[in-house]
Image (cartoon, rainbow, N blue to C red; front, side, top):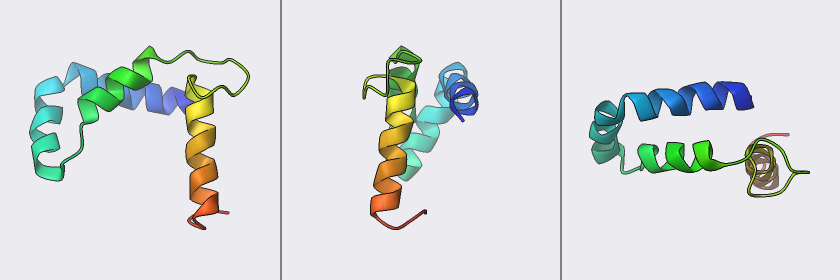
Length: 69
Protein backbone atom coordinates (compact mmCIF):
# COMPACT_ATOMS: atom_id res chain seq x y z
CA UNK A 1 0.00 0.00 0.00
CA UNK A 2 2.77 2.42 0.90
CA UNK A 3 4.58 1.74 -2.38
CA UNK A 4 1.38 2.44 -4.33
CA UNK A 5 0.81 5.67 -2.40
CA UNK A 6 4.43 6.66 -3.11
CA UNK A 7 3.85 6.15 -6.85
CA UNK A 8 0.58 8.07 -6.93
CA UNK A 9 1.86 11.00 -4.90
CA UNK A 10 4.99 11.15 -7.07
CA UNK A 11 2.74 11.41 -10.16
CA UNK A 12 0.95 14.34 -8.55
CA UNK A 13 4.25 16.12 -7.98
CA UNK A 14 5.40 15.43 -11.55
CA UNK A 15 2.08 16.57 -13.01
CA UNK A 16 1.74 19.55 -10.71
CA UNK A 17 -0.20 21.76 -13.15
CA UNK A 18 -2.84 19.09 -13.78
CA UNK A 19 -3.15 18.45 -10.05
CA UNK A 20 -3.58 22.15 -9.33
CA UNK A 21 -6.37 22.39 -11.93
CA UNK A 22 -8.15 19.47 -10.27
CA UNK A 23 -7.63 21.04 -6.84
CA UNK A 24 -9.70 24.03 -7.91
CA UNK A 25 -12.56 21.74 -8.97
CA UNK A 26 -12.70 19.53 -5.86
CA UNK A 27 -11.33 21.86 -3.15
CA UNK A 28 -8.53 19.49 -2.07
CA UNK A 29 -4.85 20.40 -2.01
CA UNK A 30 -3.36 17.32 -3.69
CA UNK A 31 0.06 18.89 -4.23
CA UNK A 32 0.48 19.80 -0.55
CA UNK A 33 -0.69 16.33 0.50
CA UNK A 34 1.85 14.78 -1.88
CA UNK A 35 4.61 17.03 -0.54
CA UNK A 36 3.81 16.09 3.05
CA UNK A 37 3.69 12.38 2.18
CA UNK A 38 7.04 12.58 0.40
CA UNK A 39 8.64 14.26 3.41
CA UNK A 40 7.64 11.46 5.79
CA UNK A 41 10.07 8.75 6.85
CA UNK A 42 9.34 5.17 5.87
CA UNK A 43 9.32 3.48 9.27
CA UNK A 44 9.81 4.38 12.92
CA UNK A 45 7.69 2.02 15.05
CA UNK A 46 4.27 3.30 13.92
CA UNK A 47 5.04 6.91 14.75
CA UNK A 48 2.57 9.43 13.32
CA UNK A 49 5.32 11.19 11.43
CA UNK A 50 6.05 8.13 9.29
CA UNK A 51 4.27 6.84 6.21
CA UNK A 52 3.31 3.65 8.04
CA UNK A 53 1.98 5.60 11.03
CA UNK A 54 -0.10 7.80 8.75
CA UNK A 55 -1.64 4.75 7.06
CA UNK A 56 -2.32 3.09 10.42
CA UNK A 57 -4.01 6.25 11.74
CA UNK A 58 -6.17 6.51 8.61
CA UNK A 59 -7.18 2.85 8.91
CA UNK A 60 -8.02 3.29 12.60
CA UNK A 61 -10.25 6.25 11.75
CA UNK A 62 -12.05 4.27 9.04
CA UNK A 63 -12.63 1.36 11.44
CA UNK A 64 -13.83 3.72 14.17
CA UNK A 65 -16.33 5.28 11.75
CA UNK A 66 -17.44 1.76 10.69
CA UNK A 67 -16.44 2.42 7.09
CA UNK A 68 -14.24 -0.70 7.04
CA UNK A 69 -13.85 -3.75 9.29
